[in-house]
Length: 260
Ligand SMILES: Cc1cc2nc3c(=O)[nH]c(=O)nc-3n(C[C@H](O)[C@H](O)[C@H](O)COP(=O)(O)O)c2cc1C
Ligand code: SF4
Ligand code: SF4
Image (cartoon, rainbow, N blue to C red; front, side, top):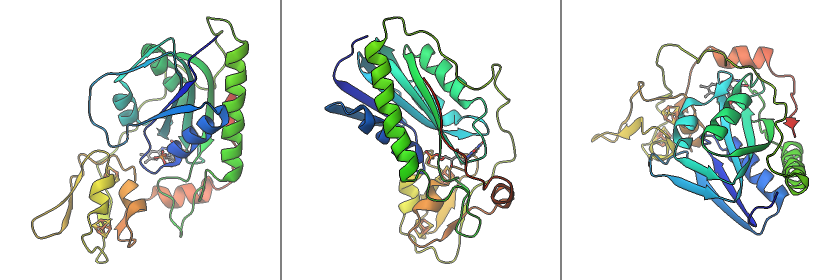
């Protein structure tokens, strides 16, 4: 199967772990031209046509599914003759049905799945006091992602159309979507109103009011923790019971799983 010498890297990634994995896969492929589409802050609905490019689609796992907002943002993509490498990134607990869900979505959007990988990223709720997969993806993870990119390209080069279907771990029907009461991070007295959290929020749930005080719309918050991780003064905190639970039960290192 032949494609243009272009890799199109598409991701939704509030805390940048999916972004890092997507880029590392792209490096491993090593094509001269790389186009990046970052959907994290982009609420536009205009169609993005991807024609003939080897594509990488990466998104975080929320509750064992692809983050719903990532799927929503990906609806803009229209793939034509475009093989796709699928990557989900999860916080060392589990990815459950996310990778099969990403596969099914990619097919609906016109892409042809070529390979798939589940990678580990620092958990959105990880803090220095209660670390969960802190610092991941690390160099070892990125090395695996690069090799995965290279192997995916080799598979593409020796495959005739149509790409045969291949096994991906996960179930259909998918597990039910997460539910729960709305909640959101809050600011502590260390907040100095710099507005950095406003800039990184994928759903525009945060604003600086006329008194220079941060206000958060909890009904818009997806608890991605981009604001928490971006605050330069450690003044944004998400106090929740999951962090301690995850730290206690899911600290043992998990490794990436690849399907080719
Ligand atoms: C609302 C929410 C739900 C999550 N659910 C899971 C999960 O089911 N399993 C898991 O291992 N990690 C889960 N995570 C952690 C993220 O998948 C992980 O931190 C990922 O690296 C974040 O990707 P990003 O850096 O691209 O935003 C969840 C995070 C959030 C915010
Ligand atoms: S990034 Fe931190 S210091 Fe800046 S406005 Fe937000 S909470 Fe306050
Ligand atoms: S306010 Fe909510 S949605 Fe916005 S960055 Fe913070 S955690 Fe994410």
